[in-house]
Amino acid sequence: MTWLALEEGYEVSLVEGRVTARRPAGRQLKTLPKALRDHPEVDRLRRLSEWLERHEAACLAQVDAWMVSSLPVPTELLARVWPDAAWQEALRDLAIVGEDPDEVGFLRDVTESGELKVLDLDGETVRLSPRTVTLPHPVLLPDLDDVREFAAELGLTQRVEQIHRATWVKPDDVRAGATEVSDYAGGKYPNRQGLAARATGLGYRVSGGYACLRIRDTGRAVEAAVWIGEPYWDDETTTGALNWNDADGRAVRLGEVGPVAWSEGMRMAAALYAGRKIEEGGDA
Image (cartoon, rainbow, N blue to C red):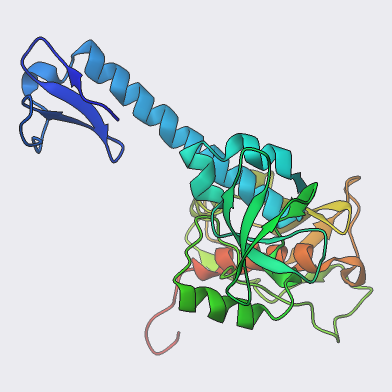
């Protein structure tokens, strides 16, 4: 961003998201001079910085939603948003799948015409022009370990957690008719407020006595839910069982839970359990 000259003899700009000042053609100052702290231009830059931060978070959240839902994304849309730096950071180096479900590559660039430059798993840059692409959830990627190893060799990084996202595969011996999983139940918290705060801090929705996550899997919308205690309960509470509900609020049998819904639900339950109070001492 360019430097703006102020009558006070300073120039100001946004540097790495922070309002920074300098003398004309001089070095940057570590702190804003007192005379500039309430300056209208400085306030405008602060508000711009806040908006850019919200915009970046919104882009990351949208791309994460596309990935978790494995929804087809029009390449025309990618071409429109790619010039925006926040969208580029969210999308670059994500694994994508075009028309051939067996062809996986990492997105490197998008042209104005909608042509995608993709680094395939042979290390070759190829150009693709599919009508839509998917950003697959890692549990759906074949040979995920090989994909991770290849990305590590190339030093690829992803702003949206995809290929290194923790995944859970539904066991073959799961009780198909059951409706809940208790693997991560029983995690103690000093109070319900702390557990709810952890849930919202991790990006999950708290509704009534549950931490919830809506997921679209195999063409079906379901909601994973973990019991966290009655609202306004101030005493010690524990994480409850994990279950899935359909759009009408009916419990989904474990045998009907799709691979993405299973993995994301277990990921939520594990993350809530990980914040539990750890007992110390001989009786722990």
